[in-house]
Length: 465
Image (cartoon, rainbow, N blue to C red; front, side, top):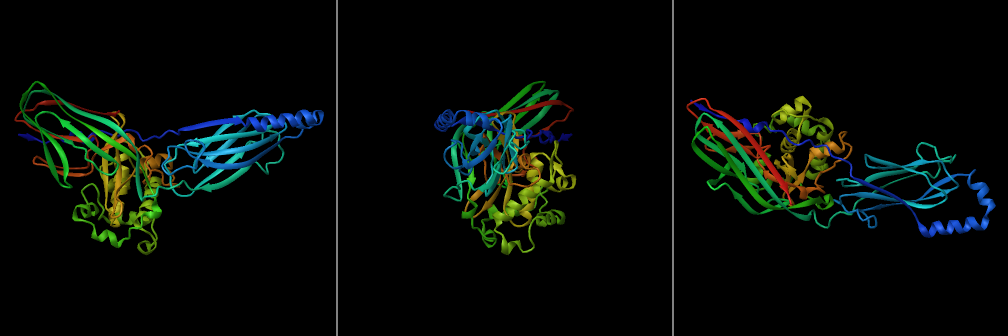
């Protein structure tokens, strides 16, 4: 009697909730402050009499800044900020300053006297294109200023894009480790385990890899994913642990969409190894009429003559952000996710990738790890001839803009150096089985027994410096 065990597909990904990282500071400009005090001293009683009865707040300038709070923000900076200069006349009651950048807001309280001040608010924002902002002094009208004419300043800024279409930067050295342990009660004739072996691609380089002593490498069809294969035989009432480890260089990523000019015609001549990523799979039903209709839902009817592939992909990306809710466990396929309206990181990536394939854009799911322990995660990549594979993370994008208003993490990964992809396939044909559905934990296995053994299986990974 033989048994096929598909246990390992059940592990779920880490929750994608993204915190808002921000730094807020408000300081008086000493030189301006001293000048105001001198003037106050000269006018003496006149200002003393009017400053308490006449309160005026005024924004004089708003300047977009990067993480250093000085230079303009660069695309892919960990923080985008606004540097605001504002004046106070009189002695206002405590009030708030409200910052809004894109769909994110920060506010903080102020209790100041007369003077000129500079306030800086920074937000973590993996966003490209033209970004709207609004700064409001005293949005609650508590200061005592009866006129709000100069309280609001709005505008837009465009982070400085890279000089290349795709730029990988801030490379970081990481070390990864994964283990899979089996506690066996009874007898097993043969136990076969597979790890997905990470490869150098897009924003990662793997200079060193090692695995258990009795491991071999197997290239799984149809996507040539290299797997580390370990075989153990004649096991009875024992424990077995297999492992893999590697050193990696990982980079953040940013794109300049203005330099990505690939046409729809260019996608027709990609190599066969790339073209296969436009084809349907059991869990990526890109040829299904419902998936095809969904792919066209956010595109104009003449999209092939009015949009570049990268622009069409961005619209579908925002649609998936908007249409899905994050929930674990995910339905098993792209079509199931579409029907259910929810998915985890694997489910959201599945629908996005299937939709891209439905309009002829090569795309694939990446399964891997974030830094930390057991931080499993899935994201995606699309391929264009001029750029190669471009990473995106629709799950993180959904966490930042669940209404689809902005395309967060579309080719912009300011934390790309905090993740490693171990697999870039969703179908694996190996001698024992054909596995469909990706490797959420980067591992799967098979065992054969004439009896009825009991197995307790645990899988762990870690990624860090």
